[in-house]
Image (cartoon, helix red, strand yellow):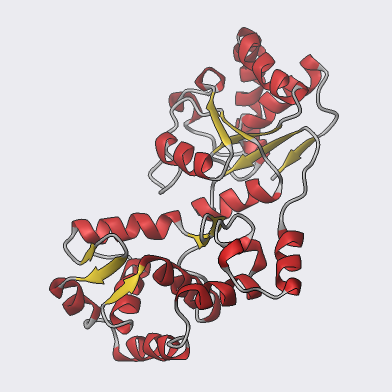
Length: 298
């Protein structure tokens, strides 16, 4: 069984004639999700060639493993099995995607990049191709203005619950985070992008340093039967009383990063900081090491 977003990849490639340049395909997917979908199938981050979706790339690899897509050095293309699968999508949906592709049939290569960069400047802020594009000065000014400004040291917390990898990474980029500190005991996740290796790789590609301090985590067994905020509060009181005092080296490491001018985000799963031990870690750094004055929850 395929996810709806994976079926979109097949249908879009089919509407493009069954084969597309890698960069063109990524930019057309970006435009389709922004212009044709109420809830985008994919989120994107600013990357080497503009907007990029780690999730869509992983999905393309999965479709290739299933024998529905293939690739060469420059392109993605449908196999015969992929073409047959794309034709099983509802006619109305295929017609909508085909109409979108006809609308952009005249834009490929640098012309397509220039169009996307002009209309969506944030996604061009890390592009290596800006110098090769014929962009008007006003467009270049908007791209420059969309770059997150350099900021002073700060301590943040962030949970990935309810977020895609790309939306999570965009929050980090816009906040100017330089170090993502994972405080999970076991950094694995069923949700794409949030197991240690994948998250570390994505952060590295975006210039964010990933660090893992498992000694600050809480064992999974201790997190069972948390049915109310009172249950969470009791767990965290015990964590602050018995666990955190045993980890001065890890807490001092975070404080050292802050003293060196880094913007550090402590990360775990839960969206609400008061239901995650990361707020205890942040407060221990704040009160025990004299830095920073405030803690921001992203």
